[in-house]
Length: 190
Image (cartoon, rainbow, N blue to C red):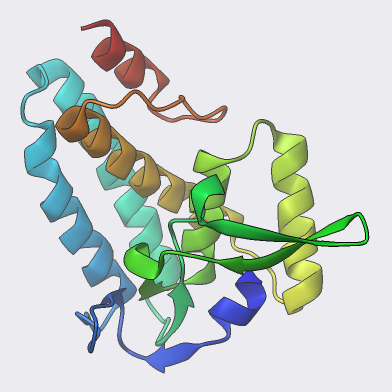
């Protein structure tokens, strides 16, 4: 399903999708930086030492994202918000299959690794599951996944989760591979 979603492409338009347009940035890194700028004020309630640790990790990830996407000119539709409430499962004589996805409210134009980073952070419980997803995705799409880029984008997904936790006061599970485990634990304990 993701390979079909990612096959919907645009040239030099990276960003959020509204009802009738793309809030476009000409480069993927510009979109990522705008997301960082949007989320950063939510973190300002944290103690300075915690905020500095988060900012340092995010800025390191942004450098990797910029290096790895500098030449990318084609954006792919990304669903982003792939969670259990947004998945329709069908049943054909006892064999279950993915029937579709709901709620495109988080959809945006980006790169495939963006959705894969979301899945890594939100769904997976270990490296074995992650490796199976990547292997399957590469086989279906016949494209190599940039793991360094995916891991950098995972930091941005987690930044979004930290913002969500602070603003909405909802406790999310800490991902198995979290770059912010200490920071999440601080937030949950305080």
